[in-house]
Image 1 (cartoon, one colour):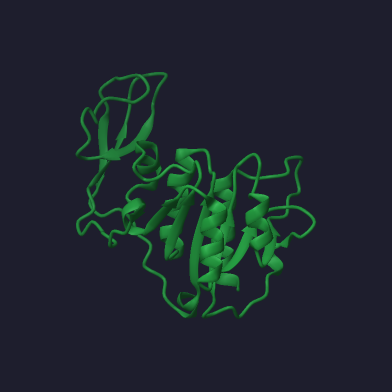
Image 2 (cartoon, rainbow, N blue to C red):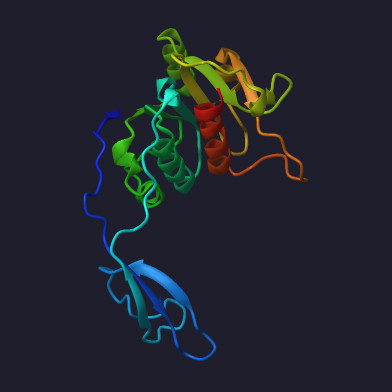
Length: 223
């Protein structure tokens, strides 16, 4: 199953209201779309709030360009459980200039409302393909010229911050596996290299969407 939709951007971003609740004991300050229903009601105590300010043009970060654009980045998400994590990863992938996302196994697709909720439209700007078998997909992609790099721990793993530089022109495929069981061993054997994010606390891993964000931006701007 393949879904390739060209990037779409809102030419006129919606206005945002900054509102404050004046009810004693609440005093919540919050932002909300000016078009949202019941926006004048406090989300916490439901009292009528006061409009403080209207922001006509929400702040946007200008699109980056430069030598990093020559690095062709794709992503393979194999058996990711959480729809919300997948949506967040779509949004991060859009920001990092990922060319394509390959969804495998039980990984939810953008047809799921929970994916759309956290992707915030990135599911429409980043092309994606679904495969039931991640190992078969990884083998085909490697045969097509992708260099498979896995985000995973273990004896083969080195820190991501020591990856070699000057990979411009390479077609890198970042492989991210299940939140609990990690990358499929069969897929891992196909990977050219394995890297991890160093940990200093008691926990031995990060949330998969957060780890993905660190990894994809490190690849984009450090290699």
